Length: 442
Image (tube, rainbow, N blue to C red; front, side, top):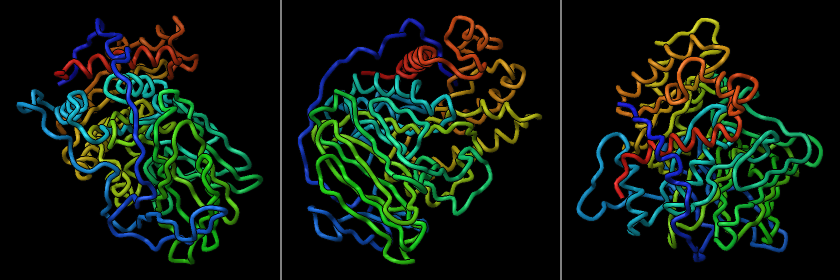
């Protein structure tokens, strides 16, 4: 099964239908309740005492409590939805009916088409305008070449990225890189990184900032500040703290800033999840996990146990898999190998969140690999059908073979013959959104 193109619905989801307010609630709640590692030693400057509550997730652990637990409640009169996206539609419907008491989360795994957050940003914004704004979701910290809608990032000093090539399909290190598959650590100079919210829709909202980090050395230490809150210092508590993914949750109201500064060693930061308070007015959150150059084998190279723990914290309602274009860079393509990898990744996601819906977005055309895209698209479509995932045919929606050149000629695509311009991604986002919502019953 694949979507029927619905061009008449081009602007279906772009108009705001409601506004939301958020009431404050207690914070500093542990982010996970499964097996935990020893808590990091904390000192503060003018703030809470040492040992301020935090949660620590062991790489070896498979448990953990998601940020929002459970599926959305059934709608009145039963579900009107069926098919691979039914769970996602039901969750959206509960928001629209006012019965939903948790965020509806979308986990988008993709390549460079997603990383710049133009395509994903359009879809996130449109869904949030209709169903409620749950916040920007997952954001990288310490990433110099990075963009995300609704916020600004700043990085000072020298920072490293691990794996050095994040798109690698080969296992690297312990494979525990957090939700987004990349670690960042300051190694020289000021070694400070910050995230500042700029989305005016969140100006009066209480938001939770969930920071993920990992100590690499027994003497690692960093300082954290959120908004006007205290400057807190966190340091590794000896060798037992090394190599474990840990989480800290802090809350603040409005368009505030989170800043970390490394003061000793090289602690790694695996990102921050920023969400509004769902207890007051839940909404949609789209976590953009796009990585430049990524392919289906990229996520398979991560430590499955560690990644499982991170995804379960998010409790996704919908997985989006948007890969396939970089496989066309291979000198000799191996469609059946890509098909096998896709099926393995779909199965991994199902093991983590069996009730979540599944959407597979096929690869776009490439001007430099026009003959390679169709066979890759075909096997990914087959894998999606076998895994009972909805398939969206980007290649056909754009116009098939040679479409990237045409989009480039009318300035919707970039000169490189692979990527789109922001306006092109907005158009593609509107087309995908129209087809995605065609099966939704308000």
